[in-house]
Length: 76
Image (cartoon, rainbow, N blue to C red; front, side, top):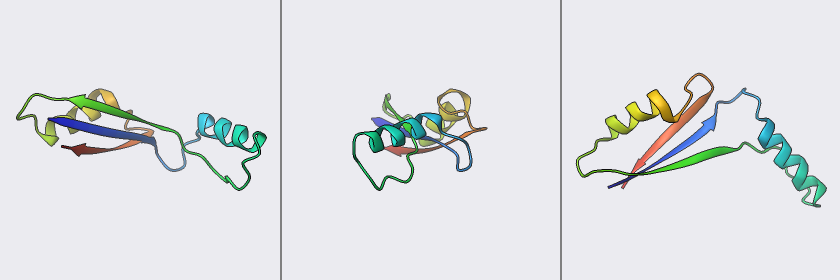
């Protein structure tokens, strides 16, 4: 069983890495990029029977800083 966790900064939280990417794209000639938000994807290889609730608990305790980040979980 696999889980994929997408972690992004919450709306309103400054994203200096995203801004650096946006600036670099403009410097490379890619016009029209008005904003970039950078996040991370965490892929988990889980034992059979692991529940989405357990993955959510992992996110709450370690994988995401819930003060400034939001996350979503995909199970497959």
